[in-house]
Amino acid sequence: MSETSFDRFRPHPWHGLSAGDNAPEYVDAYVEITPYDGVKYEIDKLTGYLRVDRPQGSAALPPTLYGFVPRTYCGERVAALTPAATQGDGDPLDICVLSQQRIERAEIIVPARVVGGVRLLDEGEADDKIIAVLASDPVFHYANDLSKLPDAVVNRIVHYFGTYKLDPVSDEPNPIEVVETYGATEAHQVVAASMADYEATFPQGDRRQD
Image (cartoon, rainbow, N blue to C red; front, side, top):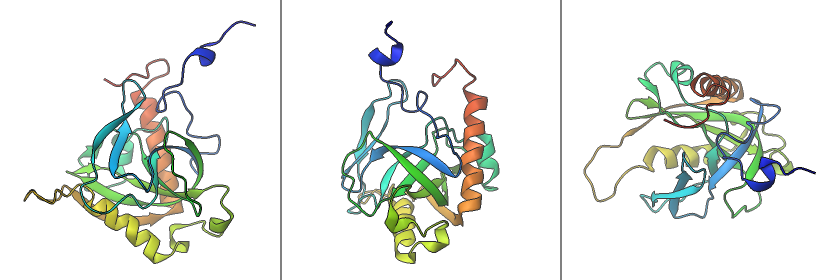
């Protein structure tokens, strides 16, 4: 049997993995950060490995698993869903995944059911945070929309992303504006738009970030 490239090389998490067979309702989330990480990690776009970005800016830690949906890109179609946005942020689509059991490791693929999202502007750029639940988690079986989640859970997510870039030793203004939250139907539209933005930005065979 001949050896394939998949036998020798790890696929790039952004370009080499799939958004999921049933996207946009169900997606495969690639996890960069867990709720127990005091340091923010993010994907290195060139190599596909996790890179240390910065320590968390405040005492608050991520409230959920946090990562991105492979083969998505926040470009003009995502920005068009946020009227005040100047453009998309040029990154893969961010996603938060709720699980009733502790998941303490990153660099994993998590099958997730999309239930809503938080619409953010980061210095004027669209920076949506999709909210999802672990697809196989029976505790969250009832949650088919953001409105079904406890308010305290949603508020914690909104508060974290509304403050996570604040520098406690600087007088610089907060670059983040929380615009609104939205339910499953609109979240599916954002995921679909980001998948279309990806295909337009990275034509088949050209998956490298400029």
